[in-house]
Structures are given as structure tokens and as C-alpha cells.
Amino acid sequence: MKAFLGLIASIAFWPIAAHAVDCTSETFEEGRYTVCRVDNQAADIRLFLRDDNGQILGGFGAVENSLEPDKSLAFAMNGGMYHPDRRPVGYYVEEGDQAQRLFPNAGPGNFGLVPNGVYCIRDNRADVIESKAFEARPLDCTYATQSGPMLVIDGTLHPRFLENSSSRFVRNGVGTSEDGSQSIFVKSENAVNFHTFARFFKDHLGLPQALFLDGKISRLYAPQIGRSDAGFPLGPIIGVVE
Image (cartoon, rainbow, N blue to C red):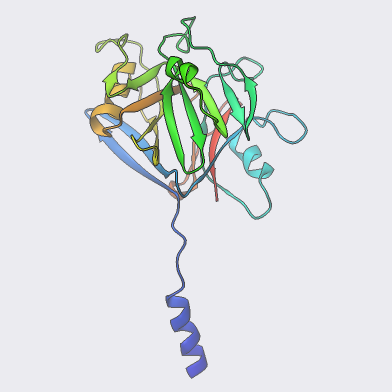
């Protein structure tokens, strides 16, 4: 009995592993948002596109199945715009290998609504960086994805956003803290325009840099809150591995 009680006491003091991702539901004005905060210094953040045979993964289940046997997917979100064959539209780096070049100039669609930006993951930090600034001073990213438009640039909203725009969709994006220690991923749970979505990052979350990832196809995987959104196959996927 003493040995059993001693075992119970020792278990009570075993350290409990802290999750590197914390997801919450938040409101801003009349909108609802799911917000997932990632500790860049503790989390294993990766980008996923293809399996070992070169086939597009395309979904959260396929990403989970591609991981090492002792690993699991703690969080995931669609990670940037892609072509019909699901190749990334913009700059893309996976495990240090660049698969697509940077496109910093104006072009068609939301991606070309410059300034656009790059989400760059390095050891112990991650940053959202405006594309022309990244072009001028490129970083050695372990993983990177380019999307657009930027939502918040150095604490100010993208200059092309209209407060009363009627273009409303479910949208998702990512912002980073000034010191690069935190990434905050957001998915709107109702349709919003760019101006409102950007103000959520700037005014509600207080982030200096934020990047739009996509709209309409926005998907979230967050098992801690019971989320695994279904939908069409995806291109790049951002994931946190535990």
C-alpha cells in the first residue's frame, strides 16, 4: 500500500507537457473568429505540400499520415494560394528547398493586390514580411509561403482596403509578433471583408504584421477544440507537429 501511494504521489508531480498551440473563439464587432496562438520558440511549425512519392497531400488526414510514427498533427491550416494543380502560386520553401520563386509585383487576383507578403519560419521564430522588403533582404527560411494581400504592414492597414466593401467571404490569415516569438492564425467564422479582417489583426490582436492566406476555401484543423474542417483538396498546408 505504501509503495502504491508513493507511485501515485510521484505521478502527481510528473511534468505535464504544455501544448505549443492554444485555440480560442473570439468576437470582434459583429464577427466571430477562431484564433490559434502558436509559440514559435516551442512549436515545430512546418509546411506540407507533397508526400515522399511527390504526390500532393491535399488534406489534413494525409499530412497526419505522412508524419513520423511518434509524431502527431496538433494544428493545421491552408497555407497560401495555389494553382488548379495545387502548386503554390508564390514563393515556397520546404525544409530549406525552394520550390517557387518570389512574386512581389502587382498582378491579378488577391495575390497580386500588392503589397503581398511572405510567412517565413526559422529556428525559434517566424515572421510575416512584406514581399519587396523580403526581396531586398532575403532570409534563410526553413519553411516559407507567399500569399497576398498583406493585411497589416508595420502597424497600418493595407492601403487598398475599403471599409464598406461588399466583397465578403470566410477568410483566414496569419500575423506575427514584433519579436517573432508568436504566430497567430485566424479563421473568420462568418463572411467578412478585407478591411474588417485586417482590423481584427491590428486592433483586436495588436499585431504589427499580418498576411491573408486565402478565402472561401479556408480550413482549420485543431483537435484540441474538436475542429477538422472538410472541403476541397488544398495546396500548401501549415502545420504544427507534436
